[in-house]
Every structure is written in structure tokens, then in C-alpha cells.
Image: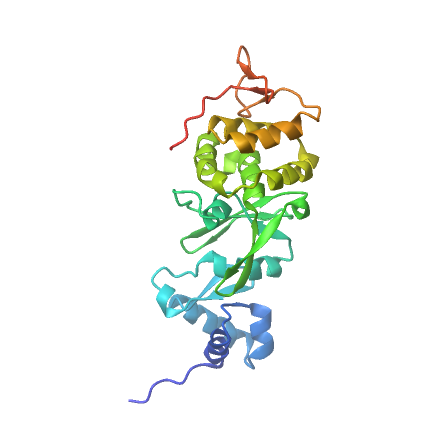
Amino acid sequence: MRMPRPSPVQNYLDSLQAKGRYTFTHRELSANVPTTSASLKLALHRLGKKRRILRVHNGFYVLVPLEYQASGILPPTWFTHDLMTHLGCGYYVALLTAARLHGAGHQASQEFQVMTDAPLRNIQAGGLRIRLLRKTRLAITPIQEKKVPTGFLRVSTPEATALDLVRYAHAAGGLDNVATVLSELAELIDGQRLIEVAEIESQMGKAPIQRLGYILEFLGENNLAASLASWLDTRRVHRVPLQVGVPLSRKRTSTRWKVAINHELEPDL
């Protein structure tokens, strides 16, 4: 029995994968495959049903090689850079996902967390959830590039990740979970680079720096805490709550950090 010949769309996608590419856009496909709009739409629909491709965002698709067809999605580390380029915004992988990529965070997050400089909706693709958080001064945050099978990925440095975890604790499972992750991330944090991050990120307020210092001291990371304390000693700071949104009345205050202890930390150590 003669096997059916691959469609022009399939041939083009196979050529992409042969070059190590796993993403494409509808516009790119239309420009490179001589077929009608209706035929292109039908071909994409069929490939989607076969779990050969997945539409992640309007006009943006990922190829799903055989070894990932059971899950129906590539690891997001493989395509996030291309996706953010397609969306035309700055980005870096952040929070719990960044901590995990650095080797910290013993509990896997159910979502892939990305910081962007644009207001974007979260993305649900197959069984994957990509959470997109906006940071107005994204460009000032120190990042590093991590190699992935398809190229590279922008990831916040361990020091920037630590401060982001405190600043965006609501997106990182709350302060108890933040403290748990920081207990693992701390060994990767350099005290001098932590001061440099504090200096940069203080443009958005000093309260997260005060909270981070308190948590590091609570965890027994005294050298890192001392680095932040020496930096804060030369700045004017105000009393802030450890946990935002919890009453402060008659709560003790850490003199060193000027942090009102309105939440008793219970990390999973």
C-alpha cells in the first residue's frame, strides 16, 4: 500500500525541526508554503489533532517532537525566548521558575513564571500555564543567559531572583514558601552582588530589601543579611510590614530591619 505523501506544510515543518527549530509563526508559514489560506488552516488543524503542533498564542506555534507528544507540549524553556520575541516585549524567567533553573525550590511550580515589561494575559497551552507578570522597570534587573536545547533563555540572577521572590511573594506561594526557596537559593547568592541588586532595585522601593534582609537573618544566613544591613544603614528607611495586607497593631518590630513582624514565618525546611 502506497503511503500518503507529506503535505507541503508538513515538509516545511520537518525542515524546521531538522535545523533544530521548534517554533514558527502563521505569517512565516504562509510566506514559505505555497498553498491557499483554507488549505493552510486545514493542515494546521490536522497537525494539532495529531499533537504534532500546538498553538501557544495567536499566530505562534510550537512543534512537538515524538518524545513529547504524550504530554502534547514542549518544555517551555525551549520556546519562551521565541514567544517573547513574537510578542515584542522584554522578558526574563523569574520567581519560582528562575529559582528552580538555578537549582533551588524542591517543590515544582504548576506554572512557568515570566516577568515582562508589557501588560499581557497569562497563557494556557495544553496542560501548561505560563504566568506573565509585569515589571515596569524590567530592564534594570540583572539577568544571565542560560543555554537550552534551542538556544538561550534570559533568567534573573540568583540575587535578583531572591529580591523578586520577596517583592512578588503573592505570586510565589506566600512568604512561607518564599523563605523555603530562599533557604536553598542562599548558597548561590553572592553578598556583593546582592548589594548591587539592592542598589539597582531600590528605585522601586526599599521595603522588599528590608523584608529580604529580615528573612535571610531568620534563616541564619547571617553574612548575606549583614551585607544588606550595611547597605540599609546608609539609607533612610521607614517601618514596613513583613506581610502586606495584614494588620500592624501591637506587633513587634525588628529594629535592625524596621520590619513589623505581622506574620510568623514557617518555612518547610
